Length: 196
Image 1 (cartoon, rainbow, N blue to C red):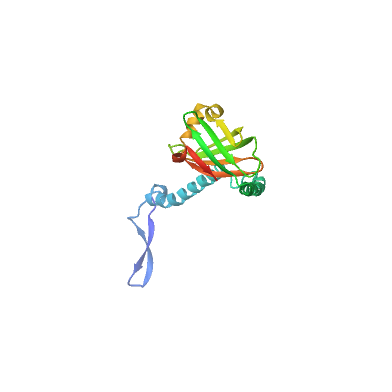
Image 2 (cartoon, helix red, strand yellow):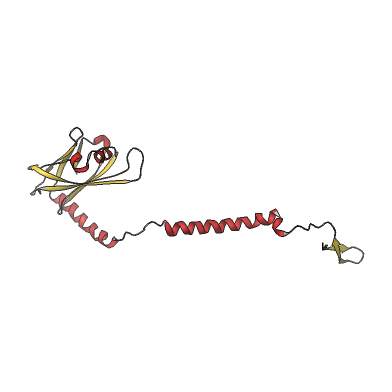
């Protein structure tokens, strides 16, 4: 066992002399708690950094859609179709009959109406607060002039119809290739919705 040398002041001579310290601890460095306390902080930071890098690489959201250019071009088309709907003075009333599970649309315009209209219903989650997005696309056929109808349970199935019926807020889009109407549809107003 080797003694640790400590510098001790010599008052008489005014200089320091080297004197062996008999009380010094002979513990090995890795058995000291303070060493591990000092090493732990930077080690945790490195581990957290590596974990964050792993999450960023493997769980990265797509910031830009793959077809961003086409979507950008479609915005102009959508704006033109909205303007065309105003120009045609499109007005409508949508009825959701829960007993027969049918949606009917009464549509009027100052132009000729098409034989069929596409209806998109989009909502996020049900009462459970889920984050899944529900998007249902239906085709309403014209039965008589200005009256369109679709049977939801036949088009979607009973389970899908019930899931859609539980959504509190639906974003509705009525469209053709020439025009479109959009509106939000609250659950409390599910029986009737006036457009636009």
